[in-house]
Length: 122
Length: 280
Image (tube, rainbow over all chains, first blue to last red; front, side, top):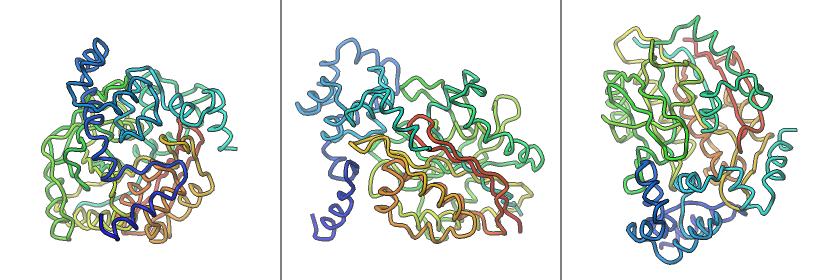
């Protein structure tokens, strides 16, 4: 990485609790995101539900990706290079809404998370 | 010559697609959001725009990370709202206007914006929700649409200033189009929200209200904000405000605010609706 690119990446890293999906993350999470992209098709969602492990292997997920998927853990999925727009499709299969994901990532109950959202409007 | 008669903004939250399908217009949670739209419906009924140019971002339906264009312009006869994989009802086809699409593509490339042109393009909720909110059912008398997709998914994303200037170039291309169409420009997405990370749920009312104020008369000041500062102030996905700046760039006449609505929260998001008139 060039000094300029490093400075740029560093500047973007400074926002606490805010992942920046850049080239480095794109490389890290490619297989995971590609699998999530496949979930636009109903037959692929069905194939994943039928055999999660085989489906992950078919898309070339590494152990870190797989562990994060098995754990249904949003922060771990993001850490492994998952992009939130694609991860949303995986979360949908697990029946998790964006409030569920928000609650999980902030360590709140879903009710407390929803209250927090509402309070910001007051 | 074609005329740009106004700019509209709407958040494009996926949950709205579900609420619309279930007609939850008077539901206590949804009412403060949906009541932001009838004044815009009235304006549309009076002004009768012929074309909607829609700035949106794809959320992983048409584009994957294998090929990620910074600016992509639809040039198709129709656009299909396809299954996005997480339970939003797909609402079918939208009508295109490829002749104007190509005039825009020719114009902006001559102006220094090297875009990706798309003769096939599936459109997701980012496009479909706002068009549905403003124009309703698209099966009977559909509005002609031109989807313009801006990358907000993978960094580097285009700077706020570049998006504003891209809008200016599109405005010039539309003004040079030999037709008598009335064109409405849609800026979709936003306002402040963040879905990912430990700061998930972040909303910034003060910043949003400042943006709603300044976008009318001082858009250059907003366009000068860096990507980094925009993410800090509006959240990781609040970055979508660059789509509003692209819309605002298209309006080159006298701009007047006719209507505004702002509500927190819909889903994880602060929802903003604006109606801006653009007069020669």
